[in-house]
Length: 112
Length: 115
Image (tube, rainbow over all chains, first blue to last red):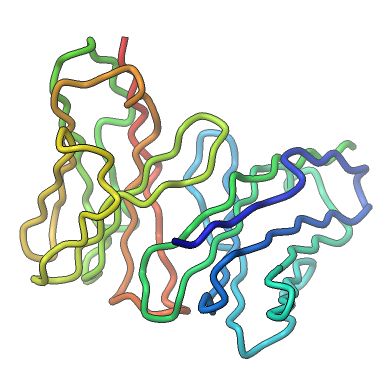
């Protein structure tokens, strides 16, 4: 099955700086890559996703890039703010497969 | 409802006891998922329901785990003879039929502690 690895496990950034989280996947058939944000004690929420026919997608301060050849995708958060502090999970699935394979998560702390 | 609702939010149980966790999906969502999240780890797929189709139970870790769903409504996840390694957050999610781009909405989870 799909194996998703996520790095780093923890990330501390100064407010206003950028944060980058990287994920690699093993199954070349995977073609859907969502990112979830989970605040402490809260439910995971989808923040952005990308499909394999697209190399980059941006939504305000958040962007995701995908490199299908290298089988990795990254989340970029620019101009970080304290409310960006949370655990971020990447995930991958194949188009017809509803089972998302999740990375282990990255705990992001934005220092004021 | 406004979102996916789960109960109980917290459950402490003694080893060997059975527990039942409940999920109320968003109205109209035909797809329902259960995931398990151990402390400090990512989410593990447990089971998937789609309408009246046979569920995909391939993620259930042992035969002590079972889940039911009646039509497109409430689902229950049952863990029999609980073990300490079952301690985790059990997250339910729902979506319109599975399709990339159809957002999966998670509940806030049921925190299970087996002592």
